[in-house]
Image (cartoon, rainbow, N blue to C red; front, top):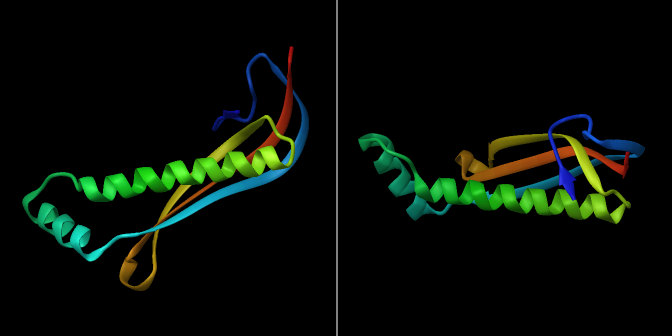
Length: 108
């Protein structure tokens, strides 16, 4: 499945717009990751634990997006937007929300 941030597909003709599809993932950050991330913030450097959680959340979000698109007969998703948020009590959870327009295309 083609998934793109653009609104068109080069060399393809959009045959049908099927609607907006969304993939979301919310990942909890545990206390040990929080402690080590805080230490890294003080001494500098990147927080590998949080980066790993964001990567997992993004992959889950894209999988859900594609699954929803396939379920309504799409073979591509265009105009994709990715949003990251911190949610939950005290910002204890990371959320990734990915949305786009499911379409059906044919080759030119």
